[in-house]
Image 1 (cartoon, one colour):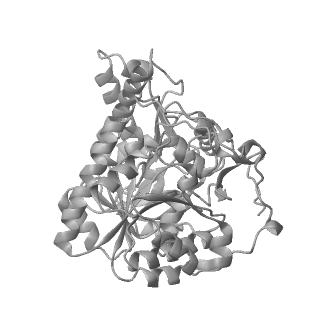
Image 2: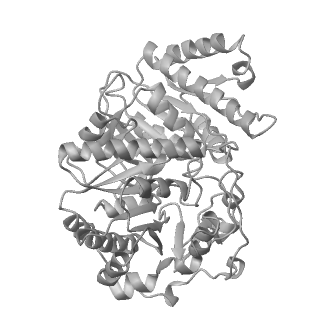
Image 3: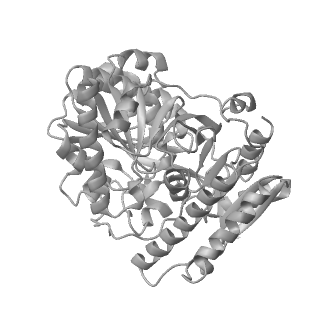
Length: 503
């Protein structure tokens, strides 16, 4: 299938945050054949046509009431769905609230991609144990999905191993496709769309990540590599495009139902219909007793929740989401990727903003830090009376002497941006808040705006840039926008703000 490549810069994280090195170092094994350097991304004439499956077919198949519970290692996973609850806390009461809502799925923001392995494992364990208690109290069953990066960065197999230890699992299904972002799987090889065409992910900058790096693009070999040989590539069940498109959901359901003792499967996907065939098959296998855990990119969540792609929110719809108490919004920028810098440049060209900088060197000086944050926050609050306000960290990326030092610096700077947002919103209520960057959007949501429960209402751009409506706490009435650093074209940030201005 030929898919046009947009003018985007390859090799940057989909969550938009150039994360510092962390504690983990990936154990590498030698790449296996076939060599993905010579892999061929199929043209449309080489493939059977997609098998059409309506979202309603999946919705009907999951009508037994079990919820898809998505443990999201980064807050950007909600950008393919609408009308779905989001939790940033996982007490039994919070989880019971989510289980009571009229929704086929909900997200629990674990943010584990930014954590060290031991902490990430402990957090997954915490969530699943509380979920089991909440499920028993509400009498509502669930299916687990571990949502992570569509270019294969994240704590794998750690997170699915933890889930398998905490709840009975027959099979783990890996389906990393993210259709809107140009991440596809064909013949079990995972690809990313770049300005120069389709690229196997093992040849991308993602694969050289200091924490989550890898050598293989072919998913069975990638699993063998990431498990250190514990799982052989030959033992991985492959669900191909031929299975999905020619043999159909009944055949795929039988493949899934055959999984035992946590055996792993990988699934191809080039479009939403492929994902819906897999979702329908999974629902069928689950209804017959199969206990599956999914490790997935954002697009499978939408398919498995019985939803189809939706148009972005309109200005009229945005009008009903805010409380109308303020006219101007606050944009917090922590991402340092080039796409964010270009988007800021376009926003400046359109005008109507006041911009303030948190200087990293001042933030790292304990004698100046508190005063600098207070001064910037006061200036932002005053400017909100007359214009949109951008508060950003200085563009120079400051790194430490080693990985741990760099992580400490990044956390210190992120905490300062969060403290600034908290101080600004306490002094003057904004009409909306946009957080730019993956780590930034998580920290601003949980600490800056104290969001525990929210609804993902839709997107500001097609398939990307999720808008949350806080459900309780001090931020009720303030729409919150999760805006990854490296998504959208150069005008995307300015276009999103224009949507709010035109409400």
